Length: 129
Image 1 (tube, rainbow, N blue to C red):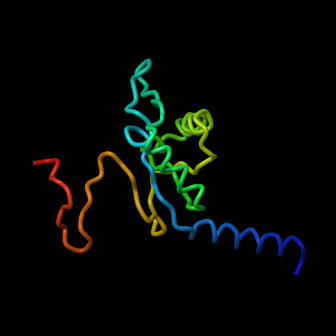
Image 2 (spheres, rainbow, N blue to C red):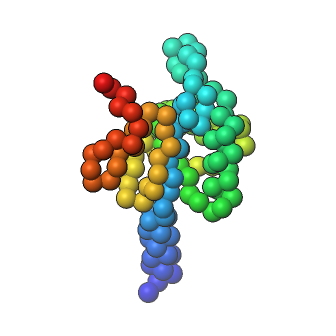
Image 3 (tube, rainbow, N blue to C red):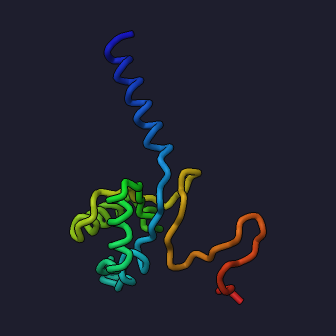
C-alpha cells in the first residue's frame, strides 16, 4: 500500500467517524439569538440569548457536538454571516446546517412541537388549532 493510499484510507475513517458522532441541533433565530430585526429587508442576527449561550457552551465544554440548525443554511451566502456572528460572540466554529440525520439527538428550536414517540400525541399545546 502506498503512502497516498494510507492517507486516503485514514481520511476516509476520520470523515466517517465525524459523521457518526451524535450531535445536538440549536436553532439560531429566536432560540440562540434574540429575534432578528430587519435591516434593508434582510433579517439581521440578534444578540445571543444568555441562557442558551450558556447551555451551548456547557455542552461544548462537556465534549458534546453542537450544530447550528437554521433555515439560513438554505443559502450558502448566509453561512458566512452566521460564522462571523458565532466568532463575534465567543462561540467556537460550529457546523451550520438545515438538515438532520440519524445522529441528531435533539433539536432546540422555538417553533418545534414535541410529539411522543410512536403515538402522535403532542406533549405541548397544539399551536395550529
